[in-house]
Length: 171
Image 1 (tube, helix red, strand yellow):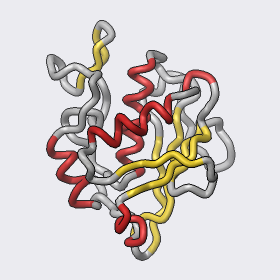
Image 2: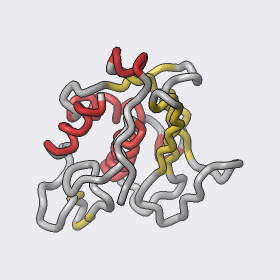
Image 3: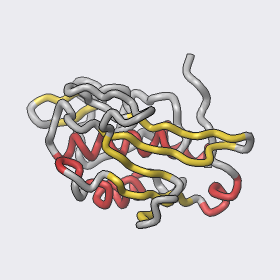
Image 4: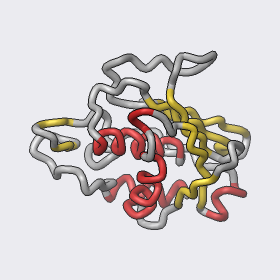
């Protein structure tokens, strides 16, 4: 059984906004954090939002996993990233998203899907849904991304209604 969704600390939830620092502005990931933020904000239907900042003390930091001390090891065939949330007595206090340096698929849409999936984890969601960006593993067939074989193709990206409802309840 997976862990329950974990809300952010009350000070952050009150404003329904997370600041995000882009420390992934290299290689394949260059330009993708600024591209993902407005897409994520639109598809989460105002449950909360992300705001880009140049302040590296932001609520959420995005990094490329490089095998540094304590960083997750994401292999060369990674189809996912890792979101680590730091939880205090009143909720999530900070999150760091680690993206694979050499993802299995290098297509921009696949990279955006990986990033937005991890943004949902950083926002407090734990358990995966069965469709939309928050699925467990994507299906990639002929350049189309789907959550289930024969399902709705992305882009445009979407969260399932179930995921949006969970996000609203969490925030």
